[in-house]
Structures are given as structure tokens and as C-alpha cells.
Image (cartoon, rainbow, N blue to C red; front, side):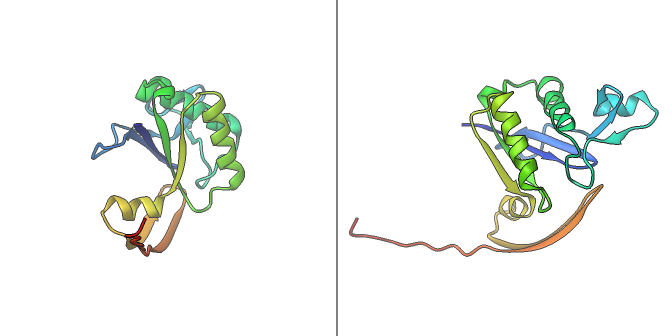
Length: 157
């Protein structure tokens, strides 16, 4: 199964299909009236982020973002792709549950995985340990990832 990989930041959203080196869609996580993304910025006037310090202030903002992502940006059929969502440490369990419910019930996606941004950064670099400093538009966090790989060879099975 292929996945659409989505990193929704307070300032910029990045999305693309797994296996590609770079995201194919990069757009501002901004809203201005009914316009979202690049259209919101082009319109001029006051834009505001759909997120506040990396968190969803409302279910409505979450719905607007996913509608924009699927209909205007990626133009893919959500039923054909699982979703890997990059997730920051301060995301609440409630926000994860709301996003999962939205993706499963509204878009009928076949699978969802919430991956911590620090872990995804380390793994994408081909490493199993690392220190990560992530500084975005609305939040900065640091972490040290120590992943210990354990293998157990059971030759008799």
C-alpha cells in the first residue's frame, strides 16, 4: 500500500507520496476567509494559521485542511492511500483521535499512522539514534532518540 506522507506545520504544510525524495506539495498552513494555502496569501489582508502552536484550535480547521489537501493540492483519491501524519510531541490524544475519526469516516482512508517528527527525521536519515532540534513557525522542540535494535535468532523454529 502506498501512503501520502503529511507534515502539517503551523506555518507550512508538506505532503507527498512515500518513496519520493521530496514532498510534491508545499503550501502555507494559512486561512484568509474561505481561502486556504497559497490562495489565502495571494488574496492579501490578514491571514491566520489553521494551527495554534502546533495544535488544532477547532475541528472545523482540521476539516478545512484535509479538504484542501485532498481536493486542491494532491488531488488523489483518499481511499487509495494510507496516511502517515508527522506528529509533534505536544499533540493531544484528543487531536489524534479527532484526526483519525475524520480521515476514516469522511475520507475512508485504508490506514493511518501517526509518526513523531523526531523519529521520522532520524529514520529518514538512515539512522537508529540521533539528536533532533525542530524549530517551526509556532513551536520548537528538541529530543534525543536512542533506538536499540534487538534481534533474536531462533534457528529451531
